[in-house]
Length: 162
Image (cartoon, rainbow, N blue to C red; front, side, top):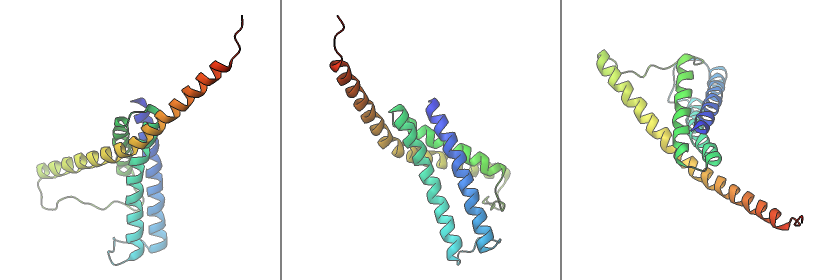
């Protein structure tokens, strides 16, 4: 469990920093302004950022699975990555944030909408983290088996001290 928190936090901070660099490059190279769906550069950088965030969920799951040899902990690591990234992006985002709230909705409706969005993102990050944790766990088990076989072979080759 500690491994999931560790890798989730490390990858969450790393993807936050990468995301801010991509946003900075977007603002400097392509001009500050609202998102333009007709500008291929802005669309490309937005898609790159989205793919890197999905990769981050998978990477945190992979490293956690490799360390613990349990794929399920990869799901927890993916969720921790989302929580850390979301917390950091809500504290500061270069160039500001786009408001995605429901205009004209009451406060209660906005809270329900935000809860649904957060729950959906947690589910998606857990699934992607678990998918990354599966090969990580398999690699971790294979590494442990190789190490155990090498230690057994070294033990068998030691001369008996009598």
